Length: 278
Ligand SMILES: CC(C)(COP(=O)(O)OP(=O)(O)OC[C@H]1O[C@@H](n2cnc3c(N)ncnc32)[C@H](O)[C@@H]1OP(=O)(O)O)[C@@H](O)C(=O)NCCC(=O)NCCS
Image 1 (cartoon, rainbow, N blue to C red):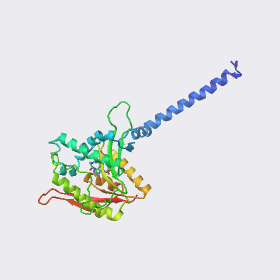
Image 2 (image 1 turned 60 degrees about the horizontal axis):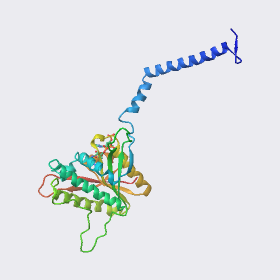
Image 3 (image 1 turned 90 degrees about the horizontal axis):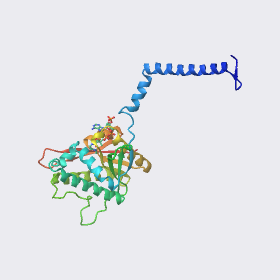
């Protein structure tokens, strides 16, 4: 009974293992009690809940992203009335609409390449099984140093690249033109005259509708807030109806409003100008 094995008695080995078996039993009992009282269940739910931090990554856009960006713009913007106001025939002429929308974002990309703007995308964490684009949202920012355009005597101040081609069939060209004029005037009045080149101006922000309200817009805005904080800039923007709630939540304040309305038309857009100094 007290036979020795490597200097230890069988009895002491039995006692040692019994102690471990008892420990395992105690742990299993504790786990059972914890799960009965919902402690483990709530932790598991938190890990898969849609309210969890989404974990989008941001990076600079490239020309290779233009197709994905065009798709997001067309699918996302249609939810806001600004889009229908300017492009009321988009559904009637989808190919035309896609062509001109892509042309617009290609022009923005020219501005990025000229160092005047930054285009950022928010991506889902890559899923190795999918070959689809992971981009779910994008934003375009006009950089400091490129807000006040030098006026050439005798020539009107340039207003940036134009996609108001009379050939395009998806748009209401008069509204498009007025929209741009009113926003340029409002930008000068509420932002450029006050902050000059010390501003980061948000030109556009759109999320793919499949990913609305999951934090992609916030992720891109937080990128801008961080940049503005580091470079001591004010963020300036004109808010769409849909964007307003997002900017308010982030602490932006309204500094003015512009109205786009063609004489004799009932339809109009009231667009608030907003700023924040992070
Ligand atoms: C505005 C827009 C970019 C928001 O993108 P998003 O990825 O859904 O934004 P988030 O998930 O980060 O939203 C964060 C918060 O913003 C607010 N918000 C977002 N969308 C909103 C909406 N449609 N109505 C009211 N509040 C809204 C909410 O407070 C939301 O938090 P919650 O979901 O916890 O309530 C998106 O709705 C969109 O692309 N709209 C069409 C284009 C547009 O209007 N762009 C704005 C240009 S100024």
